Length: 142
Image (cartoon, rainbow, N blue to C red):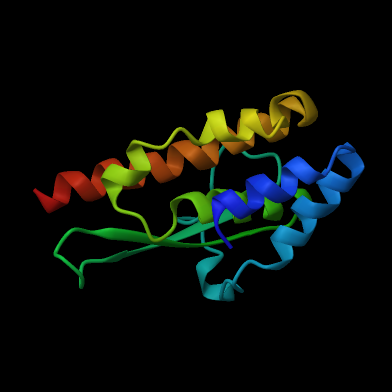
């Protein structure tokens, strides 16, 4: 699934109950995260729910690093937010990640008005974690 497909599907849903159900369904599409990846190092700080993001850097292609992620959470809605975030960022170069405004995308979908402050803070923490990973990958690549 692409971010444009998610955007199109979201646009078809007027009711926020339907949108929440769709987000939960997206969370069910996440690739399973091995239990060994549920580590303190992968835990995202600043989230009210338990959230883990596991990063792998693939340098096999053009030599430019590509960041790939697995994500998980103990909350259904948060798993859906992770699915959207990983659709946007996983499999991308650090430059692509840093050039993408994930928060603006979530605002476009209407999440600013429909997430609790704790979930909004957690979302920002996840975005910042991925952006930090991208900056680190750029620094080590040069």
